[in-house]
Image (cartoon, rainbow, N blue to C red; front, side):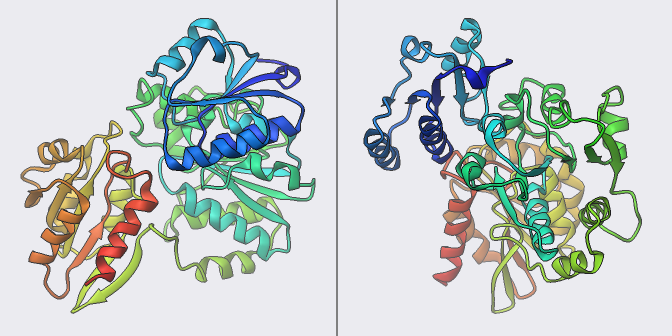
Length: 416
């Protein structure tokens, strides 16, 4: 994978926002770019017009494998899984695949703090960026949070603090990327619809640290290392967080970084106490007739659902859960369901699996979609209850992303 930066023929696979920005960026840098997306939609047609303006050859609604193969390397979207025909074709042809994160790292200036983990990435990355800013540092947050790094690369200088949220999909195809501070928040069973095994998922996460040096830092939970990857060698300095009584692991992590970077702890505390949360992450939408409506659409893992239920009063939750299963073991939440949930209403592609996993732990209702689940919840909700959208699944079966799922929930509340 060495010297790919010098090889100028590139295929960009996937014309999402990241794919578009990557194609435009690489064209500006003098690369010969071809873009391919197997889907077609109105938004893809609009992006196609932008590519035409820049004279970048591309195709929609298909992957022309022989045309794709006329390249030195491929910048691949994390939305293209290893099980797909085009991915297997590239493997057979031994054509190098790299992520946008790897590509952006070749050109970007600035010091990188990178956050990965099964849950909590967006909140941690957002708080870190605000802490850097509160200390007077020029900072930008990008990556999986919805702001592609490659779209920012030309605007960054050596004094910029770059905070990255990175998924396992993006890390799989990194080879030289080396953050100054790498953070692994937690590791739970996840994305086994994409990764072949839990071990493969863990190895993807650990790629965050593989190219660090002794001048860099790796922050992680000691129990994760002991239980999941005891033999992994960290080339950087390891700092553990999450074991201190009376302080949640996010807080402890942020104060560890404050100390490492010589920042003002009072400013860190000010950011933490002033943080009202993120949209779609345990977002309190409104209360009507004593019933609270909470939008936790960003909950796409069992770990995130457990955390949401732990914040809720016993026996008062009407849980709306379901969507696209990512290979999670939903039985892990049975104990919390029994304690916290008045009724669970399951919907979407995973409804049968949820029913099978949760039957007997709490009263269950099965419906087709989120709108029907919401109406069912209204029928049984009483003052003091919480109607909680915390799906524990991806949204892709019925929505383009978790944001659209959360917006529908909020629209349903607003219409009451």
